[in-house]
Image 1: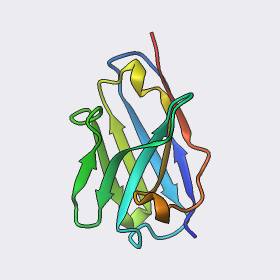
Image 2: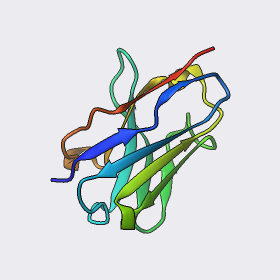
Image 3: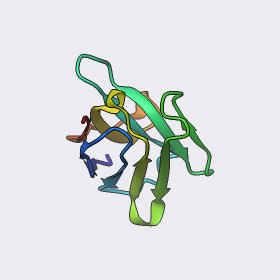
Image 4: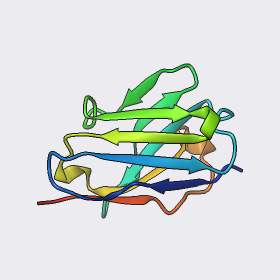
Length: 116
C-alpha cells in the first residue's frame, strides 16, 4: 500500500502563496486519480483538487483559479501550488487516492495557516 508524506505547509499572510509537496512510498502512476484533501478544525475532510493520469484536473469551487495540482509520476510526487491564500484555506492538507473508498493510509498532513 502506497504511503504519503506531505510537506511545504506553514504560516502565510492573506494573499500569499505556498507550494505543497507529497512524496509517495511507491508508484503513484498506479493510482489513476490522485488528490489533495484538507481538513479544517471542526470540519470534515474535503477533497479540493484531483489529477488524473490522463492530465485532467479538477478543483472544488472555493479554490478554482487559485490552486494548481500537478503530479510527477517519475518522481512519485505530487504538488499543490496555492496562490491568493485566504483565511478559509487554513487547514491540514493531505494527499491520497482521489477516490475516498480507495484511499490508503493517511499521512500526517501538512498544516497551512493563513493569518495576518
